[in-house]
Image (cartoon, rainbow, N blue to C red):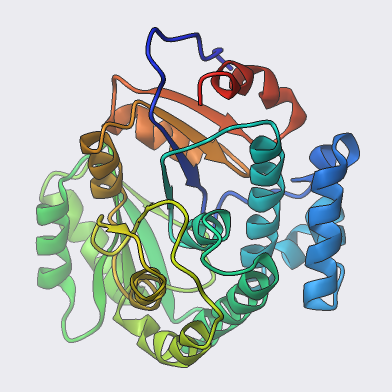
Length: 321
């Protein structure tokens, strides 16, 4: 990775946390072997869930890690292990954000609620989302090279009474749609007719962030609202409206709404940029968000941290934050 170099002025840093799709068997293992604080984080996760989440993360198999109710706490655990290490080394961000599930990691990092509570609630979130739609009945596709308004038009024209809508506005010409399987296929065809360069079906187990997730939202809402929560120590720019959340209630309600609402990631990054953020660190597995941020906020410095090998690229920021 390109090393983040020193800057004349103290950078304004945002930490961004990845969502579902960034999982990979073996994630977090090297961190745990290299740093006791990361091993302690995974031990805490295993204790909170009464199961060996760490084993699924480190050893798989793939099909077990891919189960939504395992994937979500697993990504959360890796992200928080990495965050705790960076915090212990002195990294001090000014803003936090996360993509879908990653917004839970952001709230743990902001001490809105505890890591253990977050693990339990995201496991239920994953289960509720999976159970909201029969397996195979829903789908998601990425529409490349067509703006969000045109993608929305394609969905409206292809719906034929079924659910299909924009689920993620990721920026850089990438918009994800979700809904009933046949409606998603029709909307993909319509998007091509409207000028989309490519339509890529996504290997997901449920159609996230659309109206079909309303039953999951209704089941999860009481669990979220019952959490023991404090005002975030840092503002969290939320997926649903790209607004900074500074109170416990606002942060929780944003998590309730995002189950069935689109993830407005491009707007999140643009809001962070408008707040003066100059540097982004993706904390957790993968580099999906780093790639998107580079395309949305081209002048920014961008780094990612999910393994010991990434530490050298982050170290210059530790003395500046």
